Length: 242
Length: 214
Image (tube, chains in turn orange, cyan):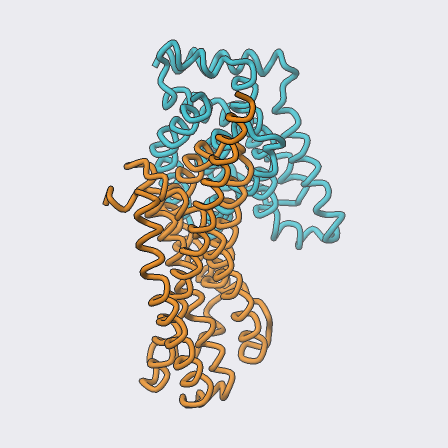
């Protein structure tokens, strides 16, 4: 575990893995899109609209996986004080937030033809929206505190408190939903999914996962490079003044 | 325990001498209750239906107002460091601030709630449940708020940041609080959330306080 905390070693490993991750993304995304758009059956009820699912469901999975990653990185940062874990958490947050936004937007576009409305206060929609605000709060805390080291620790505390709260929020929202509006609208074909739909869904989820990894590594590389540049400029300034 | 009471007492005295900042929260709460009928219309039946929700929303927003001053002044004049130097645990300090916030902001808001209920034509026989739900839920609200306040120590114009941090986390409290009107089980869930938050937050907020003093 500790051996991966070395930024130099991370950069070496990352540049080694990056092409493979990119290849995985391209293969999964291309084949997944092909199956999703051309080689999967339309839903008996929703028709061709069901294809939104292949963009929407993986985004929802990655939105939650992104926050879990954030929490695990924050945990590592608090317990083992890995500087690299801070970089990872900070760089993962905007990616997760964008996935959450994609999930909300595609869900809303999907809801218009199938449910007849862009937005309903469905339990799942509401908890994803709250997740989006949790991401925004995390990002805002990072940018509000000027001292990097302090911002990292404060953000870790927030992420860990947030991850404890996510199940409670989910439970409360579901409970609220069953209290206030009986299930008038239900997603069709969610539990009994056709095998022909499973394959593109799996491929697209893998593609999103690879994409997450690739962009995360890019952002981390950029962030580490920025830190080094700053350190070097500071050292040069010191030389000049001395 | 004595130390805890002393810490809270110091804040209460400072608060009274400093012009009673919590009064602003009460005023804000009353103004929200006044604006609602203007916004949605004065029909008594309609108001009665949403009164519990408005009361909860008003309390939630009003408690946000005093959070910024929970740790910030002590950080600016250095007394936060003094506490740590004198080996007063930041966890104890955080707990004292949660309790202080509850006593100075939440309790007055709960006490004004009958007036708000009156303004919004809330059925008086259900007032007890509303007050109980607020009494059980606001400790959790103060705890989450204190955590956000401690994380935002030293941030300029921290009010907006604190609101952004607190509001998503207070979703369960709002839901359980309003649901208590129709389902008594929600009161137990409110109590559970508050107790859980009171157990966890002092450590998290304590860590944030120590962080700010490094």
